[in-house]
Length: 194
Ligand SMILES: NC(=O)c1ccc[n+]([C@@H]2O[C@H](COP(=O)([O-])OP(=O)(O)OC[C@H]3O[C@@H](n4cnc5c(N)ncnc54)[C@H](OP(=O)(O)O)[C@@H]3O)[C@@H](O)[C@H]2O)c1
Image 1 (cartoon, protein in one colour):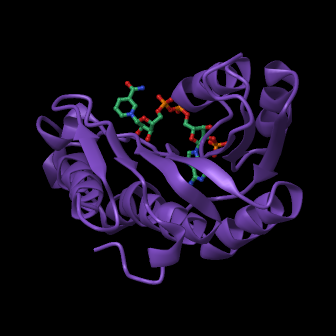
Image 2: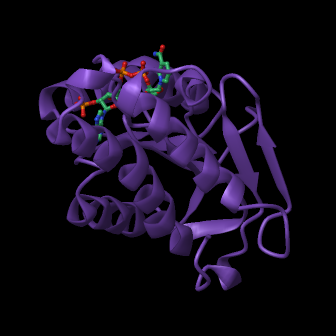
């Protein structure tokens, strides 16, 4: 029996790269996955590549209405979540003098706002003892321009879910900055995560 037998996972940015590799692994371990991405064609191809136990929900994590639609679908199909993997993100590299407002807004909207609301809006469906995983980056400690500002924001969000009555454990690997938060209790999700 797989390590994730019967578990339900939501993976944003699951059409390629780290997200798709994670989705494949989770399904191989017995989970059912919901994956997201903005491009429908790539999303359909990813669901086909995973093969079974996967649903694709097209959407942009920077758009709250899309996140609402994602979790409504999860609620309708499975009714609960065991793992939220806020993975969707973009990296665009420009020299500091070339950082524009559009560049800044795009990166923060997807990588910071998107991650925060992916977690916040998924909490009501998250089982007791569920896991939240945020993809980080070495850019939080060694980065370029807007990325260097952005990644610590994501990490701070993870750390703000510090161990306490709501969360029993948080593990942050120093360089990859993969933050794992465990045991958020559904009964306590009325409280803000910060
Ligand atoms: N690969 C690296 O070396 C590296 C290094 C540091 C950090 N990271 C971080 O790790 C995560 C995954 O990276 P990766 O290399 O696997 O990326 P990737 O191969 O470029 O895949 C990114 C995924 O995110 C989706 N995505 C992008 N923007 C989105 C949005 N606004 N809403 C929903 N989905 C969105 C993409 O699909 P659509 O384009 O169709 O939306 C795609 O499925 C990202 O957060 C990235 O910043 C990666």
